[in-house]
Amino acid sequence: MKKFDIKKLEAAITSKKVEGKYSLPDGYVLDSQFQDISFKNCEISNGSFSCSNFERCAFDRSIFSNVCFEYSTFIDCYFAETFFKKCFLEETKFIHCNNKPKINS
Image: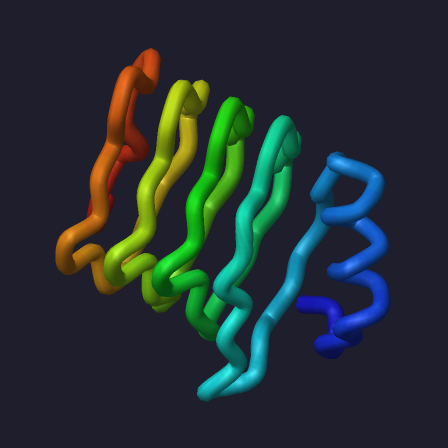
């Protein structure tokens, strides 16, 4: 995994194309509004996206491990071959999504 570099992750999010591997530090929280972002061939482990909103995002061949999505909402998102492994999903909502990630697979 890449050593965590917040600037690289922020740059990827700003470019609306997140790829590669990121291991977030324990306790790192990124609660935000994500719109029209492609998460393709990426692996993200640890950290938290709690209370985040994902709108019209595409998740393609991606893996999220030990990530907190508590109280997050996914609206009109696309999921293909995406896995949420050991993720915390309390009160997480998937609204008008084409599919859902494979959870704890």
